[in-house]
Image (cartoon, rainbow, N blue to C red; front, side, top):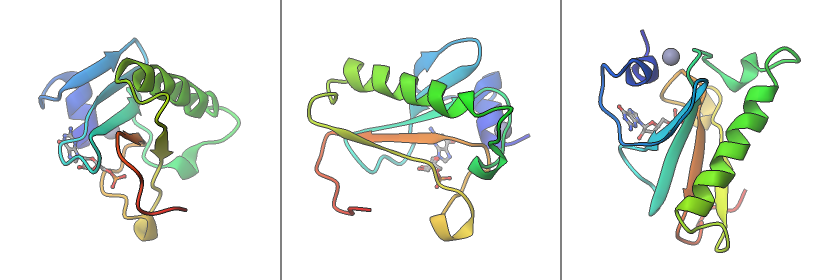
Length: 111
Ligand code: 5GP
Ligand code: ZN
């Protein structure tokens, strides 16, 4: 089982900030910004590249959750970035799809 599936099951602790029946969000263990939250579906999907017509709603749902968390953490006005890494060149390290929510400072790297 992957590390994020273990977090979903409660087998590995995580600092949860949001949960419903399909999704969870928790603080990144190695934050790159003052606010750095990971939003995941509870269902195991390894990669963004597995998103297709059948499951595209997951991306929208995660974006809505990211917006809610941005409001709750007070970064909705200052701005934030969402990132989904996919595959080797992106640096993806955990192979369970996740959306990074980053904010609370100016982003140095502008895509
Ligand atoms: P990726 O590089 O795959 O897009 O992002 C994986 C993220 O997961 C990294 O930012 C890393 O710090 C975070 N991470 C890895 N293992 C754990 C963990 O066990 N708990 C939490 N909360 N974050 C983790
Ligand atoms: Zn998983």
